[in-house]
Length: 236
Image (cartoon, rainbow, N blue to C red; front, side, top):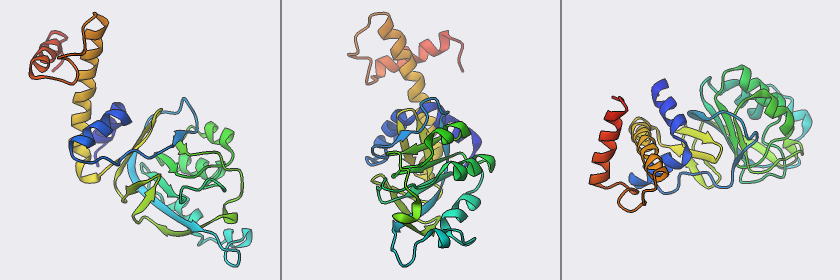
């Protein structure tokens, strides 16, 4: 995964990427109901590293056991590779925290690109202070062992109704999070960048009073106009 591909995806945004993936026949790519913890957090893009939880059980999960150095929840924080996005399958449950501010601060220091859960985080104000892009369903103040038990790192998961495989590219912005299959990432990045540029042309034309008809979606004629517009602006 090249830095250029990740940059193009981050710049394009989730809505444009979702449209590009639809053209490849992929309909279920946007994680449902997730929102950024901080409204002003930067865009996020990176390969997925995954953590899967199942419901906790009282004879196994406790705060004492949580302190073990081989506890998978804490190992996920230490083993998620720099530049990756930690994606947490919490079974769509925000009854307890998927992580807290200290864990997320550790991810930020280690150079991780972001963190996503289909549950919730605790200590949201402090998480905002880390500056790390973070996405959740709802805030979840209760301690993790009350309701969640970690069972697997870096395997296929479901997160917010979408399949996520290790290495898939996770892109987040102010609207939410989208999953790009690794094999399509480079191609979709280029297509999304082109779509973004075309939409800038459309916005320019709308501001001049032009109708959407024959302009958006693109037609052969409007694409010729767009290419001429690009040339006039001196773009390559």
